Length: 212
Image 1 (cartoon, one colour):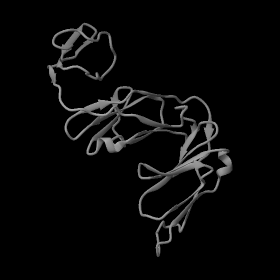
Image 2: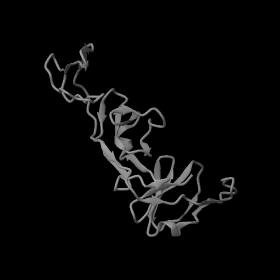
Image 3: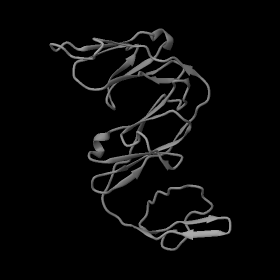
Image 4: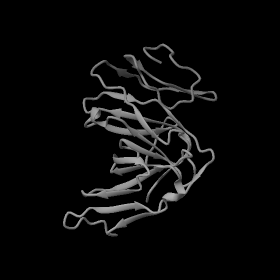
């Protein structure tokens, strides 16, 4: 309801995205029982850019074994100081779901809510992730030196040893949640600065897997 007027009926959604001002409430009906919430006022104020997402792989399909779908916010600098909450099927995800990047391992409809430091909120469009066939090998990642220490300014070398398992694949090297290098056949990366690194591989069959 908005200002006492019914705006959405017979819905099974737990969440509602308000795009107009007003006093909102929700009525819940279960069998012969019914209850209505207190009203919450939505007021105008502030602007926020429309968020866009990167999705790996483009097929949005989780392949068997260790397959994933990775969803990441583009242009995160537009939301400096913001807080993030990922949702699956309109429900908050409770684990590892408060950053610009989320790794989906289950099928479902995923979205990201962004709340800026000045109180403006926006929800991305839903991403429909499937888990329907395909498989991809685990990553055999070699790190030299093994302890990952940069000594005398010598970079740490990382290389995917089983690149043959992935055919003509694209390699995305991440530092934290940011891509620092990518390319087809880019099986090696030299880390010259400290941080947490990993590689996401998207093979020719549109399957994706993280290194561990």
